[in-house]
Image (cartoon, rainbow, N blue to C red):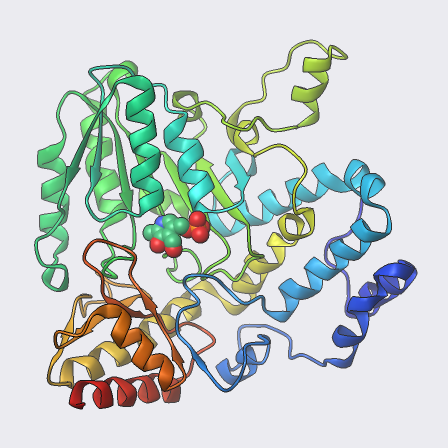
Length: 438
Ligand SMILES: Cc1ncc(COP(=O)(O)O)c(C=O)c1O
């Protein structure tokens, strides 16, 4: 078995042994990076990222920069693939992908057989909804707050199966959203036709965090009175909670959970995971069949037909960027080393600081709730009547990288994370103050 967690010396030794792949080695050999752990300071943690120092990076919720342990893992796998691609894949692929699934499952507190590996949240939601085995007369209940990828995947399911889609507003004013009302609006929208409820835990449109676990509990109660053929499947896009919130999947009372791992978790770009309850996978079918040997070999005829169930059925097949896929366990491990509670406390504290500061600025309107129960790492706001893009452009003139929410109602968005400091939040506030005054 090819060890995926090598010490630095072993790693460099193996890199050297790969000859042609040595190009990556010097840069890594020269660094003496601090070791992530529960007492690592945040300034030390920041040093793990090669982010340019002349900018304040508050948009890494869109796409991560790889921290050093992840870069190291990618380079190790890349070196092996560069030196001997086919034998590396033939010999190691399934051991490494299972190891990634086990590490993700440990972090999420679920069975690794129920984890599927994907390239992104977009791929996971598309696999999930597009493959749903629904029929005319069935309904998918979703909200108007979800991402393009969820909405489009649900639309594809409707076009393919003839099911209907109901989209509800979970609140009228995001800043004053409250848990009871959100749960109630979902409950009231459920009818006997509802077979799927698809929601997003933390909205990238406004930063609202919905009470995903309590909604799941409410749906479980309804399911107690339904038979297997009309039960509701509850699906959650968890991408902007993963790597922030101190949670495990059982807390969410859901049937499916999907996330990209290349945002807050700091996993390799182009990676994601999805999870399904063991008895729920049957509602959906794979779009890109896994190449798991049992499937492939049965198709060839070498072995009798095998049932490849659970998450393995949904792990997308084909040859792809294996060095990124195989290095994903390093990101889950990094977060476990830091400690989930500590990560959550830090990101919430930075966002609370930012929101409290924004609230003080005349002419600034906050769209994200103040409460930590109703928000996470995303802070959305507007300055006077300036378009969101103008605010983000003016922030960038002041070296602050923010983002614009890609929705019909578009806001400026700052998303302080583990690589940011209190001083950077204060600098961002100074910049917003200057923009608001001008
Ligand atoms: C709520 C939400 N879901 C899904 C996505 C798509 O994520 P991915 O890049 O993993 O496909 C985004 C994009 O940032 C998002 O904000």
